[in-house]
Length: 437
Length: 57
Image (cartoon, rainbow over all chains, first blue to last red):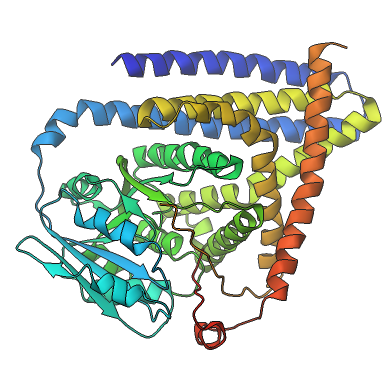
């Protein structure tokens, strides 16, 4: 209760500070008379308001979700589900990470688990290594299937077709799960409306500035956002490292499709379109390896952006179905905003302020722009650290996060968007796992 | 020089450098990818890569 009270006070303080900053921002701009600049200012202010509102709403929703969850905690403790959960692990040349990820699945506290490793035609020792872990007991089992290589979506579908559980959990081969993750997520399926539950993803290899900034992005930009979306039961992407589905719902939407690079986003959209609810369990944690080098990070974001845009393009008819499918339409617009509008506006605003500084000599505007978002990032990071128990040092990284990290990512997103727009061909990627799980 | 003005100039310079560096890094990434063999299917990579491994990122 004290935690929630602190969070609410913190939020009121943020609103006051941001309000003052926004006013000063406006006041500084107001003195510039050029009509072109005035128009630019209006666009920047309008956009800033949207971003701040979006951020604050997600933060509030996230806090309300937390309060609701805490109040239900005692009740939830009594609810022990005995759903059979089939955990599908699609694996293509994952020999380095399987010895770290599979034991975390076997050690799950949920009593009724079937683990299915799908070797997707690997050319290394993935199959042999996974085979070493095969076992079968009364309540748990691990089996390894192998098939010719045909991509991740098909590998997952292959696993689902061989699964006997009522619930399907899909995890990446490089995901290491907390031991109670499955148990926590399975509890949500008592509600028949819930078709899927997403879990939290944390970065396991926080060993340099890039991975630390990604760790902050994961807890604040992804997990907090999902927690906020879960208030509306509209989580828009079930992350690859940890997601659980009702098997019937997956069959209802035709399982995973292999026509986009973001199969997780695509399947989530299909579920939302069918009217299913999607929740989020913040305490179900999966640790994943983040890119350690800048070019690998760009490569990852390039694929994410193009994959999401492909999924949006595939379901674009939903954008205008406000009346028939409001939830799906809202989700699509939200995704479009995150993937396209926000990166473009962020970079455009930075360029605009730089131009303004050069022609007018007023450089203080960029300070206010930066400070507003850094306060939001720090508040978000502080909230996440309080809730998740992540390292407090992540709050400090929020300074660098807005200073160059987000800008850098947004440039990659914009250029990837252009490539997707012009239909430049994408090639398959090769990810070198370091095994730092 | 007051602290706000100093910080503003500093952020401005960092923003400008980040923009330039971000674009350069993107094209470095594209060049790196271009220098790798092009494939249109997993099978082609498998033939060519031998023991090395590939996957979605």
